[in-house]
Length: 202
Image (cartoon, rainbow, N blue to C red; front, side, top):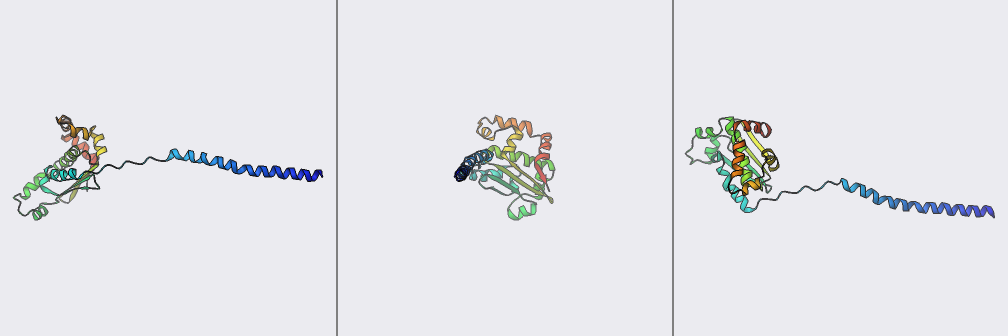
């Protein structure tokens, strides 16, 4: 009789021990979820696209940049990325503009020296950001005598390099902020430093 009673008690204890395990497992699950949540990376913000009016303004602006007469194309891609391409030689320009009175000498005057090309790439990229602060990036390509000179710069990098805010500069009616930037950076010494960092030739 005592043996039967002992076995019954042992069975009850074992059953009680088994029934408590799921409770422990259920309690552990929320802790695992809590530790993984902080590791989730925040979503990157997507830059706003230029409005239709801003794009139209950009298309009128592009031919006014240095050497703009020899622009092959200018467009805004993906809503806020400016892409500007120059003709690679005078023959292609002449073919597309047969009525032009310009000569090959005029074409070469813009691009014959490396510093002339670098001046366009540095200054016109910067001025484009100033005129259109909602642009996220500017890409200018100048092919000349078998080499293509390129700059692909995003606004964040440009603002960091110059210590500038292009929206504030655009809103500055006095134009003083732009003049300060231009006077400080638009010279041969600063241009050489800029070229080494951002301009590619291939």
